[in-house]
Length: 107
Image (cartoon, rainbow, N blue to C red; front, side, top):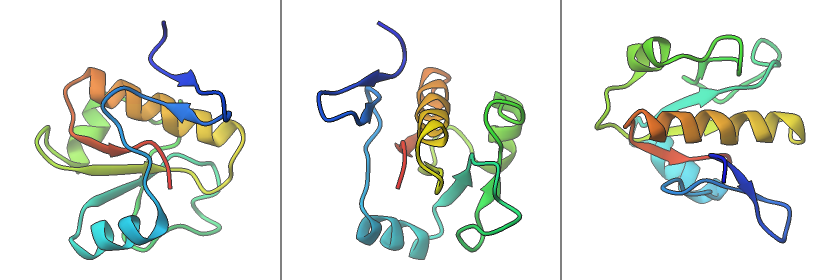
């Protein structure tokens, strides 16, 4: 089995990551948890204080570790849907595989 699987509802699942709702995302944002936007539309709009790491072109462990250390929570999201959701899911899975404390595979 790969890092990312699709459940019967068509949602992406990553072992160790949690999909969160908007209320939880707001609470994490209020606590200054790092948000990483993996979509290609960052310049058009993004969550305030979010970091851009377009997946797959910009994502690697070095760049992610510039934003957070391995013990910190992180929210990885894409606001586009479709293929961008798969990118968010893949990035979350790879972060977890590298021992990073990923909180979410999408908002």
